[in-house]
Length: 274
Length: 210
Image (cartoon, rainbow over all chains, first blue to last red; front, top):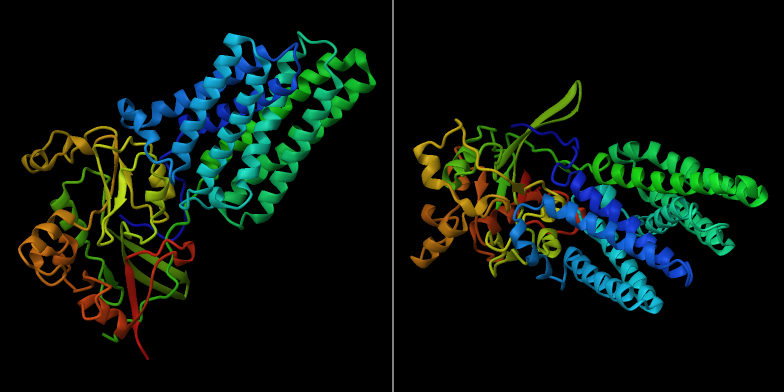
């Protein structure tokens, strides 16, 4: 067996693990969107958001080697962000299900706050993975949180455009802010990402995020505002673009940019002296 | 653990000894020796570099482990409790040294288990994280008999015992009189990826002190 100092892709976390970050982030964004959506339309985004988070957790459960011991994930909340993520998930589902059962919007808002904690834990899970430079780069937590907000907002737009007409201006402003925040978080993260294989792997997705996932949705939202007749289609496309660009970026971050740093020798052996 | 890079000849005897002592399945190699080419023609140098779990003083694998399966003993050896581990592989992506493995299904060198593989097979290792233990059971058994790890072979990791070039050394780095402390005092050394702050317990000697 021979390895050089050249980094190679991690093979431990596959699409199932990436699914937890992708679906969990979007679900969280949807929960936050539900909290901001107002009294008329919080139930379905809340239910859909919880379903997405559950699907993400289910996906990662399929990846663990000892599925019947999954409860052990709760044992080390003292230092492990994965354990903390599990505890916060329990809180999200508890509050969310209570909100749906009791019909209480404030409980949905509390669930959204807890979901924000959930996605923050996801960001910290990546940041604590010292073996993967693209994950341990400062700014990854803000990127994960910001893209969750944009993805959730995007999904809300893409789905709500058929049932809520016209979409409230406050929703447009919230999505636009989330898109700006994600664009800024990506730029900040990218500036801190060192040169290397991970950066190369992320560059294309980053450009897509900025152009197709940020600029294009903002332009479409503006078109919808100026030309109300085109608004349903424009808003739908804007939401879809915001969602898809975020999913692509996270998939690449989790799978294609997840290079380790290989091995390195700061000094070479001086032979013959011993 | 101390590896003298000037002495290692890349014979892989330590990797074979580790495999024999720990019955690791195909593809799982707790002790490896990298064959590195460094530089560009015509300034190229070849180095053989033993690697594995560095038993870090501040191990990221332990901090991220959600189940407390990964722990650190008082003597610094980082261990995995196979009965607690859920096999999430978070420790594997947190390890900067690619020292951890997860095997989801039993596998054997020739398909069916040979008698030696049957003898060493441990079902608890399926679906969980595994890595070098510094042959902790061997060390403990030796210590119980009053032996000194790194000096007495029966209290020393198999890879160190097997090294044909005396490139691998094991001992108590906190004891200034120990074999490894003396080697570290007499030679220039480094630890891999030291900038990450994990304080690896694996030192590489590369030159004499001037």
